Image (tube, rainbow, N blue to C red; front, side):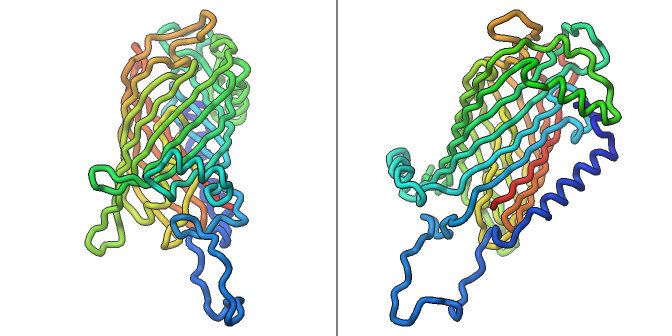
Length: 379
């Protein structure tokens, strides 16, 4: 979509709508921390033994009755007041509650994969997404040879998230392993042209005229693995804030994207144990789409980070794999920086992230930037 996708007024409406949805969807029964037990309300008759505990391995109540976390993400250059390159990404997904105490075979598998942590746990998820890429000048109908191709990516994917505690150099880190498989279509079948034209028709935005030059239809597959290490939180001598850092490393393999990335984020706030940072749409190094309980019942943090990616293949720059198409000479090394704010309360999280990315191909006029908004609600 362009930087003028909705205009300044539309940007304000988008932010107001996101905040409204965040507040409206919050439900007391999905609070981060359960209310303290009232001894007077204990229904167990005197002399009877209490029923077996159903707490999870960390002492948190088991997610009885929970259906998981639903997350909506939108990334757009509108939020960063730009109009080029990676212009839009939308993704909606669901992540299950922790599964160790729900499925015996999950617990057995975790004990085999993570023998160093008897309390390791796992979640699964599914998502549907669309990403859109355009050259900078949308007014030209002819092929712009020195700018990136028009392209779209429509996909469905599954994820596996596994958490475990691990000691590294005598420091106890929380680790998160993420395995994701995405299947979809690049080209006209991605419906990127229709999506952009529909939105531009009802907004103060130029009509994109070059979609006849987009990449050809091609089935796409991407397999991704990423590990995050969350450091112990550091307090500041009684101040109501703490800090942590989360190094990350990941690799992607497929005809859509093949790359290897490293990075880290630094966070300041409260309730940092609730997540591993807010989610971003791949191939960006991402946090998590789900949220955990924290002791205070709410959490907030500001964060900043950096990353670097070695790019072996990017279909949105290299062009189609099995047919001739428009392409540009990509840069093998791409850097990025992020900054933002996340707030979580009563089982819901709202996060805003600003992303800066170095030039991705030869001839690119200036570095890229875009904004990300995500809303996660645990039911």
